[in-house]
Structure formats: C-alpha cells, structure tokens
Length: 127
Image 1: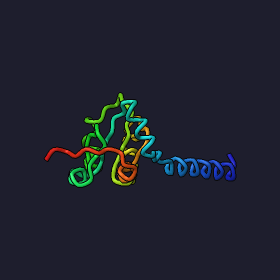
Image 2: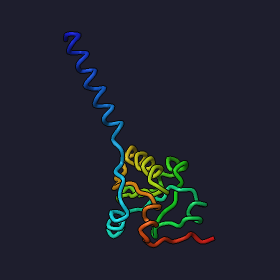
Image 3: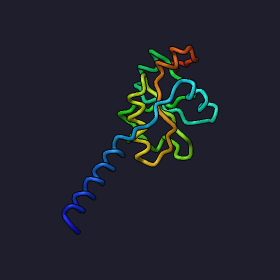
Image 4: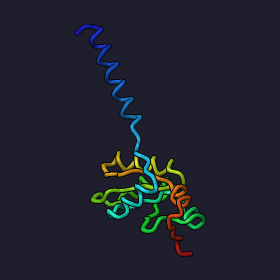
C-alpha cells in the first residue's frame, strides 16, 4: 500500500472518530418531554437533591445525581427509554452520553428551567 493511501485512510479514520465524538444526545423541548412522558419513559433527574427541593421536579422522576450515575447504573432500567433532566440540560446531556455508552436507549436530554418557564407542573420531594 502506498504512503498516500495509508495517509488517506488515517485521515478518514480520524475524521470519522471526530464526528462520532462530537455526536451528542438530542436536547428536547418541554413539549417533547410532555409527549414522551405519556409513553412511559424513565425520567432520570441528575441534579443534586437540594436542587429538587429548591426548584421542584417533573412528576415521576428518579433522582440519581450525575456524579453518582456510573456507580448506580444498576438502578436504571435497560428495558425502558430514558429521558435525562437537570436545570438547563447540560448535565442531562452528559448523563445521556454516559447511558448511551453503556448500552441504554436515550430519547433525549432537557432542562427543568424551560419546563417551569412554560408553567408546566412540578412536584417537590418530601422533606
């Protein structure tokens, strides 16, 4: 194989790897979340517990903070589609990427800030 062909294959593999690394979980809107909740998805809230107390959460959530997610993957069902949520969607996106890496099906990531801004209902954890 010529040096030019080898270099071309290397660049092609590098470009493909970069494209895959840049692929991120879809950010979903509050309307999309509302529709997904009707389909019985698993709603994973990755905020810290004190944030849930202060801001509230979407009904039906399960709370596993992002920093604990990899050590608590056994608590996330593999047989359900998952939606991740945090304040604005950044941590939820990271959590979704972790889940996808471990073979979970993720519909998207979102933030409760938009949910609340559109006057959607929230619940608060018991004190």
